[in-house]
Amino acid sequence: MEAPLAADRLRRLTHDHSVPGAQLTIHRAGESMSVTTGVTRVGTTRQVTADTAFALGSVTKAFTATVTAQLVAQGDLEWDDPVAEYLAEFDGAEDDRFSAVTLRHLLSHTAGLVADHELDDARESSLARYTASVAATSPLHEPGHFFSYSNTGYNVVGRVIETAGDMKWQAVVENLLLRPLGIDPVFLSGGFAGGLRTLADGHAVRPGRERAAHPVDPYVPAGWAPASGLAGSADDLVALAALHLGTHPGADTLLPATDRAEMAARDPLADAFGMADGWGLGLAHYASPDGTWLGHDGTADGGTAHLRFHPATGTAVALTTNATTGTLLWADLVDTLREHGIPVGDHRPAASTAPAVTTGPDRFTGDYRNGDTRFAVRTRGDGSALRLTDATGLTADLALHGDLTFTARRTDTDTAPYTGRFVTAPATGDVVLMQLGGRSARRTPAA
Image (cartoon, rainbow, N blue to C red; front, side, top):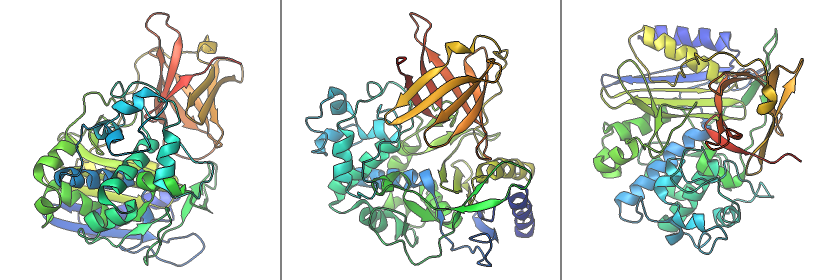
């Protein structure tokens, strides 16, 4: 795909999805192409450039995982050592399951930690205090039993990085990874300066006729820096991909091939249902017509980021946007790129062939909890359909199928639908778990 065509397609897609601004970078056959469109904030003339920083959301985790691999390569850490050996905060935790948690568990989201633990003071940037607070929670399950996406786990990894690197997480990431890759750091939280680059504002796009984009204030708790505290450009994401592909000039020095392979290997216990086709150590697996691609997706308040790279061909694709509808734009972009000979990997859950469930939804109603996150599933309307809500304002209608899978479509904001499923106890058939967007939540007893 030539640059003028790519720029035209990106302009059309941002218009179609009410995205104020975006960046797209494609590296293929040894050459890179970057195109940008739009503005950093609606109502202004501040143009998006290739250097504009966008909130990366959970794509930050790929950077945190890479730094962890660098410390393993240096001999400072081991993949399968209990992290309690590195963390005084985990030593003596009330729940014995913490003593078995390893870096491999944390990076593959199989540690069983709650998804979104927060401190009472969201401004608290100490990862030591954060980790001590996590040690007082109750895990969802024994480490290594199944996949449950966890921001908490990556924040704990950030604390491990601090103990091994003897510096704040931000300083270790900057010195070991970002500067060597030529990336000018922009940190969104954790008490570090935001950087000198222009930062794009986030925007929410509400469903309706106008689908207008409205600026929103970003919210990243200070203790969440290792999970979602970075900002950067599509070019920055492709620079990270070049390291993992081994095409960066200093790749073997920054991260030896054996450790890159360790990160990329699929963990058989990490069944990332509804989120990806598999998971490694900080890298998700995405299917495509030409085999598995690696990468990560990220959402922030009013923005999205997407990274994909293909080890077999050395191709990399990155997209950043400053609107909630960036997830919808990404799906359309993947289709466009595939039409033009770039078979980008993406998770496309197969539509359930099981019949829709239109009777007896009371079996699934109730409250589901993952740490402090509580979901309520209730019947709506004539009692034949289900609605999902939580305390953040999420409201979604569930289309339920006989195989207990469902599609959740948000009614409060315009985003791509989620795929989820209910899980039953083998002995009784009772619904005990709900999995949504890669996270698991346990059903709580009725009040």
